[in-house]
Length: 381
Ligand code: SF4
Image 1 (cartoon, rainbow, N blue to C red):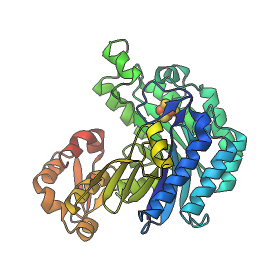
Image 2: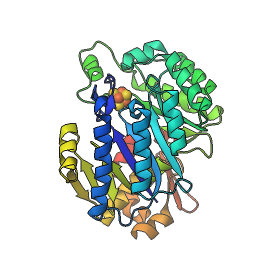
Image 3: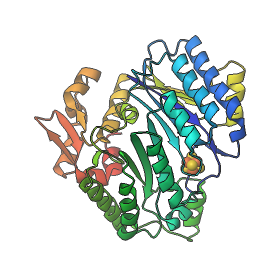
C-alpha cells in the first residue's frame, strides 16, 4: 500500500510554536499552487517514479488546507483522483486538515462530494488562555462550532489535534479541555506534547524567561492523566501520540510508522519510494519555479540500504502500542531484531521499558517505556 500526501503551505497567521512549512498571507496564490501540484504529479509520472505506486490513502495537510476556496479544493481532489488513477470507492481513507476559523459549510460539502471522508481539525486547546499562549487565531467557541459543522455536513470521521504541556498547565486545565473535547464526539484524537522548535516566538519567550514549560514531573503527570482519561472514554492509544475509537485509526499514518511508500506533493513535502527518501524544497518561490519549468522540486535525497530500512522500521514500529512483529521483520529484511539489537533489547526489557511477548514474536514499549520513548528509542538509532 502507498499513501499520497499533499502539502498546502498557506496560513492566515503563523502560530507561536510552529516550525512547519507555512507562509502567511499567500493564499491568494492558491490556484497557481494547485496547478503546480498537478504539474508535479505529471512530472513524477513522466519520469517513472509512480510506476509501482498504488495509492490507498490521501492526506491533504498543511499549513491550512481549509483556506482553499471550495472550487479550488474540488479541482485539487478531482485532479489527484485522475492523475493517480484512484477509484474513489476503493480508496481506504482521504483526509483533509482544517482550522476552526476557516472551515465553512460550502467547503465541507464540496470535500464530502469529492470523496474526502475524514476531517482533521486543529483545535489544540479548548481554553482561551491556552489558545492565546499558542498564538492561535480561533476561539474555543470557533472550535466547537467547527466540530458541529463537520458532523452536520455528514462526516463520520472527525479527528482532532490537541497540544498539551502548555506553560502553566495543570491537570485541572487539561481536564477542562478534554471534557469539552469528548463532548464533541471525535473518532480520533492526536495529542502532542508541546515542544519548543528553533526559531519560533515561543522558544524565544522561554529563552528570555518570560514563560516556562512544565517541569518533567508535571509533564509526566499530564501525560498519564491524558492517557487514563482517554482510555476511560473508550479511546484506544495505538501510537505514542494517537488515540482512536477502535476501528477509526488513521491508516495513512500507520503506513508511515510501518515505513511504507508514500508520495509527497508540494512545497516542503517528502516522498519515500522504493527505499529512497526525497525532500522537496521548502521555499515556495523555488518550488513554483522548478515545477513551472518542468523540473521536480527535490532538494535532497537519501537512499536507505536494507539495514538502514530495518533500523528505521524498528524505531518507527515501536511508536505503535502493538509494537513490531519479530517474524515479520525477519521475513521483510532478513534480519532478526533480537540478534541485531541483542544487548540493548535485553537491557530495555530488564528495566521494564520494553517487553517481548509470545516467545519474542512481539516486541514493544511498555507504558513506562512510552513515557520516556525518546530515551528508549535512542538506544536503537
Ligand atoms: S495553523 Fe498549523 S501550520 Fe499554520 S502556523 Fe499554525 S501550526 Fe503552523
